Amino acid sequence: MTAEPDFSLCRTASVLIVDDEAGMRQFLSKALLKHFALVETAGSIEEAEALRQRCHFDLLILDVRLPGRSSMDWHEALHDPNRHSDVIFMTAYAELDTAIQALRVGAADFILKPFRLEQMQNAILRVLKRRQLARENFLLKREVHQFVDDDSPMLGHSAGIRQLEAVIQRVAPTPSAVLIEGESGTGKDLVARALHQQSGRSGPYVPVNCGAIAPDLLEAELFGHTKGAFTGAMRSREGLFHYASGGTLFLDEIGELPLGMQAKLLRALEQKAIRPVGSEQEVKVDVRILAATNRHLEEEVRAGRFREDLYFRLNVLTLTLPPLRDRREDIPLLAHYFSRRLARELGLDPIPFSHDDLYAMQQYDWKGNIRELKNFIERCILLGHLPLQDLQPTSSPTSPRQAGFPVCWTLEEVEKQHILRVLQASEGNKSAAARQLGIARKTLDRKLTSWEDATSAH
Image (cartoon, rainbow, N blue to C red):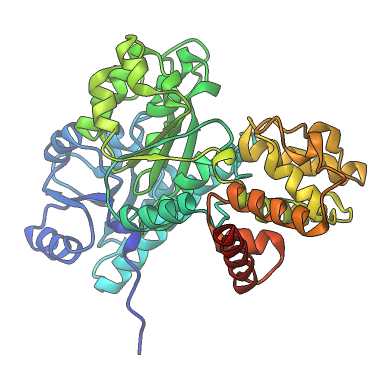
């Protein structure tokens, strides 16, 4: 039994069928309508060009011999530098010269009439797969030359992280825009990737650091440009909105966008269409937008540095990432993770953390958040030990690291104070405190109960 072809690549694609036979147009249109986002038909090149002026088509299916003008002479479509379309030619005349000419004008495939529907479907899928591979290849090359912050794993047992994961799972499958806020190094890119991975969207995840691109190049980078649109534009190039089609575009550090670019981005989001620099025609796009910032955008709006209408357009849902100092109970888990991972990457032994080492890390405020923790662990592995002098406690001036416990205390008193401080650092989460202390939850409950009973007796 033949497996059903996978038409998922067609869901966001558009196709134009040009044939002077009404029966062929109807046959192909009926077969493709259920798979493509848009299917249009035309009986001549003139009619087809009028449609192409109004809408961009990812795929053209053209009969070679048409009345008045051959499809191979349709230079406007076959050689349009601004809006490339893949082309499948079909003909009832099995002539070698015709096939060679079709290849010369850029045909992606060539089909002889009469044909079975399966032949056309397979040709279409081959063309769209090649198109997707070209897009993925572009994105891979781009990511090789672009720093992507993937050093912030969403690991942890803290209430904030558990709540964040629950919200991601709920909103990921929706097309709604999401604004991700948080200090630098808290893992905003990782949250955006998680939203995309759980979205079910067939297109790619495309991250853009708005603060890392020169302001005068931002428009061309996002929307693309035509040949000669500006100095240095030696050829036309499609923008990141195009490469993210069917997927997710992550606009990191969106607060860095100049006001002029904010207006153009707002229009693109509202119209679901982009206009490449130097072009007079718009191109429809299907992109889910995620944005992130370490600024307070409401304050930026009040200060006149960020457009209020764009803020409202992006702020459908806001996810706020907690800084590492607000989830200290997760630090031991993150430290062990980075130690194992970085040791493998560096070809060195991981660092064995003692209880005191982890306690010192939990007392430090980590102003650079998870990124700073990761860099510290890497430094430890390179040195072969923990440079604890780098971890001067910033959260409490009376922490044990600075003053220690009085020498007159008994071991029981030291144990009690240490357990209470770990419990406080865990924000009262007894399970997290027990894991940090290396004891069973029942043991912790028993000790706390005994201390409460002793206090009541006095």
